[in-house]
Image (cartoon, rainbow, N blue to C red; front, side, top):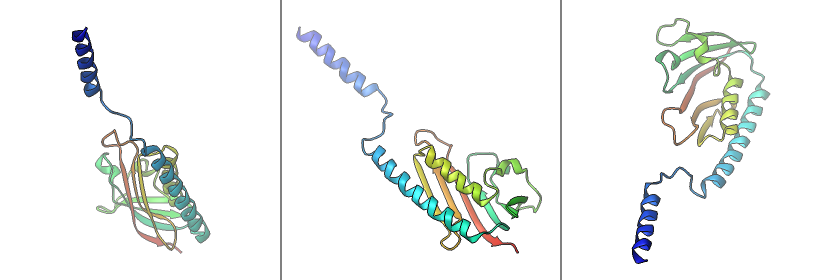
Length: 164
């Protein structure tokens, strides 16, 4: 009887040590909810601030520090006229780049959509810094899943200029 109990306990101990832990700590879900609420408030505030500016023609430099092909990283200068992207050029060469690489980031409203999508998908980490005067996102750092490597997204907006 003692032998079978010892074997059972040993087996349980072995299995508990061999089973990978994939669940998040108990506090992670409430923290995620609180963080998402804060991110939603910041997004709403800054999107409204941006919309109040009524800026439809502008340019900015975008860098995409992702685990993707070099041509999709930039930095590139994106020019928008009357709310539509008119050009995307390489900072290094001055030549046009494939607009498909930047189609999700080629206007300020689309950058707000990237943030909204990360919130909706409950990204494990989302950090955004906004321009205090105009409201546009200056830095967007997203880690969609802490358990997956190389799916993070790091966008930087610099040299923002309103075009008359």
